[in-house]
Length: 354
Image 1 (cartoon, rainbow, N blue to C red):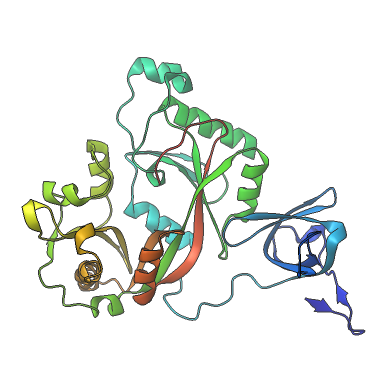
Image 2: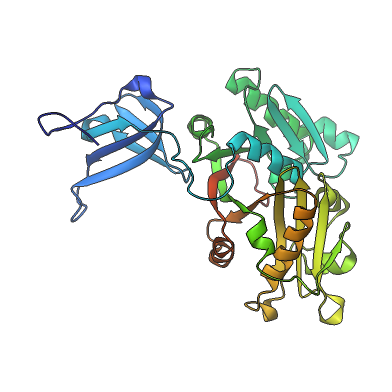
């Protein structure tokens, strides 16, 4: 907090600092025992009618009455990372999009509208949103990736988004990110102001690739360019469709890993996409009866070695904030959070899967 020469706390932010990362101190909530002050750090996303809105790294928004402020200052954007590969949000967002490609996409300025759902019959397409909601394969492949300017005022862009997804019988989702330099706290605030719901949040973690490869010999792991019936039998998304297979098989250089198990169903599986210096890990699944035996590490190590052979040096993966087991595993392998990402759903529409 800013302290004056006389030793007093001072508020050194104004409405001109909207869009910047700030640290503020306010008087604690009335009736809160033992807490006189509350500190908040995040991006100042609005300051209207005597109320500040700050978006934290997690994507949570905090409303603060201007009258309760006792100190505040602008702080540097994300601090320098102490470990792991350096990467911008924009680079990782594009790499992640290529690793989980949609079946269909269309540009709206710098935004990419993405869909992974079967063909919509002509009559249903003509009826648009009234045709009813359909379930696309994961939100990531059925959401807008807004990297830049849509080329239209925001309300017009969102109307175009609703029409595009409505024609495909899908709810409209916008994927945003918070917590790193160049992320989209301001867009998150604008979506929430318009009633869009933050339905799902997760994190993208990064780490060096070589230490993962060194963790296990990876013996007994079978690598393939395609997901066979056995691999799909272990995959947690039941009833995998033709569209899902296109998404799973899409990407610059895709590998599927399996550890043979009983009854023809693998004991463990994983998926890796190699894209330049990056390797992505996903779909790591282990037979519940065989967990805590190092099988997930064995699968990751085998995939990491393959990625190193193709010239990759860094890795990324996505993990849900409430998946304690996965977070412990990836943390032990040297991964750490780079940014949080969120899926905002249009008001009044149905939900899908992440």
